[in-house]
Image (cartoon, rainbow, N blue to C red; front, side):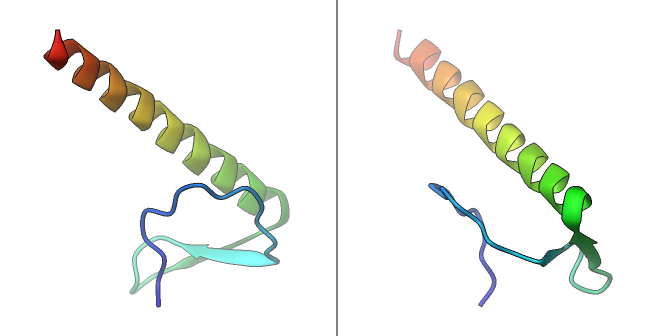
Length: 60
């Protein structure tokens, strides 16, 4: 099972992650993995904030 669109993650314990397309995943470890996860969380948070702002604007 592949996780898609996870939310509400407080803690991750991983030695490595695979990112990229299924046919050509890239394995990330260490600082590269931590940076990718930080960016993923930042992007997700930014999108949620933008979506909330659009919803609030549409309601007014």
